Image (cartoon, rainbow, N blue to C red; front, side, top):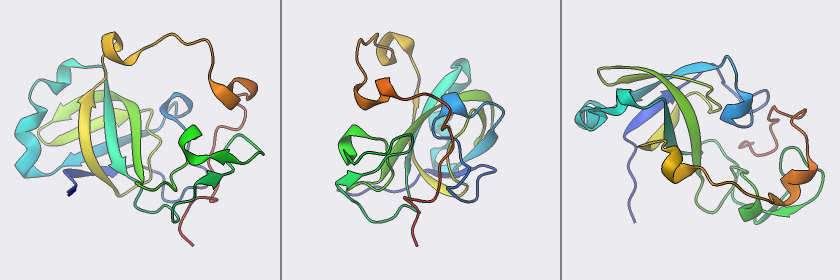
Length: 157
């Protein structure tokens, strides 16, 4: 398997500590996505979407652990039951708000990603495909949004 970045994500967040945990908790946070020139043609028609999925590589994550203490919790959990960045394949995804497409530059809001993060892919957010009503959400059902910022527990030493 071979993955190459198609761009780089620029945000105001230089370290994990203080970064919003998810886009829904990143009100007011804006950034840009610099798509490399050879992929710019693939942005055609993207401006018609209000939200997009950014798929990226957690380039500053600590080595993978299969059992972690996730943000917003004090118990140990299996990494696949969390969104912790220290994973066997450190792939992240965020559904950010697309503000504009300016050539190969995307302006985005509600971003929860560290500055300089390698971009792996972009997909349009489509409620028809991406929204499922659910009745249970595991251990997250017992948590509140009051702990909405990351700390440095998953960052490389």
